[in-house]
Length: 205
Image 1 (tube, helix red, strand yellow):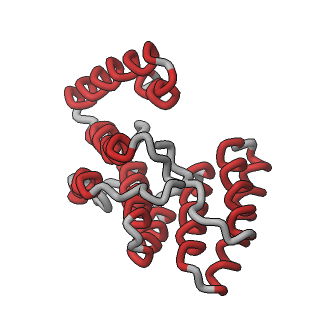
Image 2 (tube, one colour):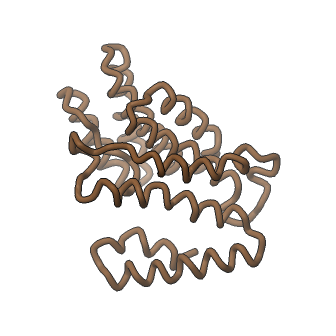
């Protein structure tokens, strides 16, 4: 899977970006050949955020015209028959079906929040937490996303809860050396305290 993740920093470097695509296809083919369905599904779900970002380009999530892309949700729906499957977490390979479950609910929550379907987003963040297990990075991303939705609701009680949760994410990320999450949470804590919306997502778009 190493080559596949070259995509993560490939947006600014065309050579790395294209190399990442080559490895993406290689990984997909090998996973399909070996019956590694979880790996196939992880690659498939990544297309949801890919088109979400592409359709909105060059806008960022902080721009008022940034919008939800229905087709992104449609892509995620393809994972539904495999989410909450009986063998979740039993495959020793990484990614496992447990990861598929977490990614589905986490990405679904982000897209629902983008569409301002906040109640649905909170439900999916709660379900994503159940799949995090001992993966601290995953847990903090989910908690951070949940805090962003709570802040977007606008109610005073939710606002305070969002600020407390975001500060918790920041502190735990700092202790664990998870710099990207720490910086995002620190930025969001400042924005929440100042009632400055929208917040920065914990997703890589």
